[in-house]
Image (cartoon, rainbow, N blue to C red; front, side):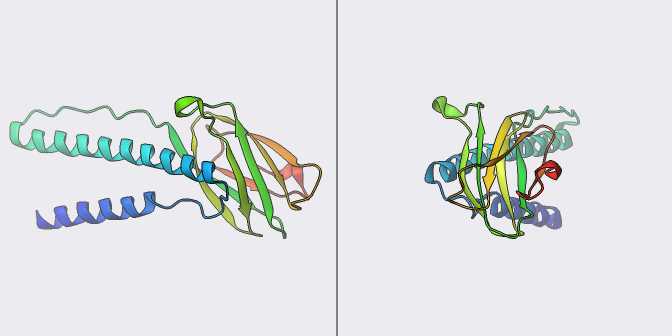
Length: 165
């Protein structure tokens, strides 16, 4: 029984530590705050579902009646932006998906070093226009459209815009 509690404690500790990480490549203060809020909401829902499952299991052990709790449907997911460019990429992600208080889930001013990737939390089913360029002073951005229900990983390469997915 001690081993089970230790295993649960380790799993909870790891999940809490991993959930606190914000993408280091976002430079816009509002986007950083939005990422933290979405991550907190996602972590809270996951921890609540886990606690409900554990409570249901403990109740089943003592009463012999198992109540199957239905978890809430997932509303956020991780998205990875991968830079395949040999230069630093400047990325802005724009959507019409609303968060709280009429705030859009736009993620702006993402600066991704060459051949690195940025992990973001995005709403599932949102259509994003991803604008990116490898020169900060460039007049035009490359643009791709993604849907977060389908895409978990987006490859960004300004030299070869047709092979971005």
